[in-house]
Length: 556
Image (cartoon, rainbow, N blue to C red):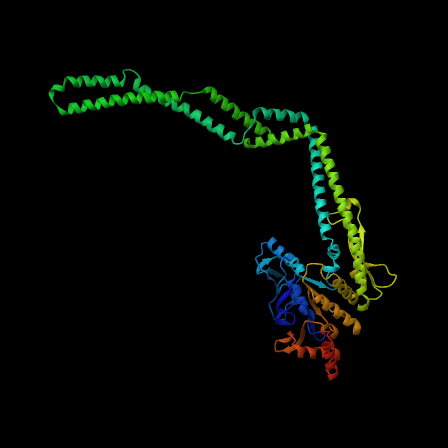
């Protein structure tokens, strides 16, 4: 429900902060006091069209913020989550209109588009009136209201799911049939390319592995040449170890001289001889390890080049060849399965379609029953609202079988005939302003538990009526207020006396010009306002007594 409404600089309203509660909330005041301005301002917060004329004279911008507390699980919470809009159990809608007529919209202080603001607003508030083409006046909503009234939502869900399954089965059959037809057109080509891919059997990542092996083999050849050259330096001609041993023999003849350095030199030559032998052995081992394998290199290059050629042929990279192979093999397999698989999918689609048709027919039967009951209930409400000749009908327009949708086999339209013998037509087109407001009230009383909006707004639903008819309007608004929050702009004391909360709109002259203010009424002020509504400009004791009678009789 609407919890708080804050308005800054909208037409005659300079600054206004209002708190609302559950039940029926009445807005009263003299003609021209600015009651409609309050609803226009709330409409801005709900996503209505903005214009610079709404800004109070002398101000640079208008700001309206409306805070709501919808029940847990309300669709508005899902909308916020879907668009990543942070929030808790409260939802704050805010609109800023600048002097050039442009506006900015916010939800929980996060900027959003006006379209999303309107979508959230529609989920939270339903405005009943001729100027509003959403809610009950939107033909697209009639099916949803009828299904809610007739408890048909479960059946409607079954129809939507059955149609989804049928469309999926139909799509699978169509896809298989197209694949089979295409495969037959390309059968020779498919067999050739699949055999070619079968022969080479490409593997994911194989190109990189082959290229690495090729680089390693080519690098190995260069390394082998270097090792052979190094070994030749040691072994060609007279071997180094022989020359070292000859040097040692020469030193042995000089050993008797007793020079200590000769012994050190001999030991060093001995170590060098051993190292030379080990180095030569290591180089020989390396040369054997690096023995070139031209045949392996050739095999690697042949496969690498073949893979790359095949990838170019299929306009793919080498790593995608395995996917290409699988896809082409699947097409060939579909061809080989032939008509058997297509026939199986045809039968599955027919079974799914039959299930959808059966579910749609069950839903249609339930809707026909609900439409009859809804019309009877609404028509019972019309005579007390001075709509005796009017007849309401919930029309079901059957669709051609090929036009059936996830919503069923028919369109649902709410229609009315306001004169005996007249043909029924759309609500907004047939009923006049006052008739339409009362008709929507009757509908809303019967559909009190249908729809998701926890707040309803009625603007001058009592227009052109008084006495018993106005009392009937008030009684029905109060009945709605038992389950929903209802805001009503009214001139009828019989309606206002039924309110759980009463607000008076007053226009006054100030230094800043003509301004409107809204004040919640305590019991005594409410009595005076009801007396004014009954008596007019001069409130009399008789009017006060009549107001007491309305309140004391339990009407308020």
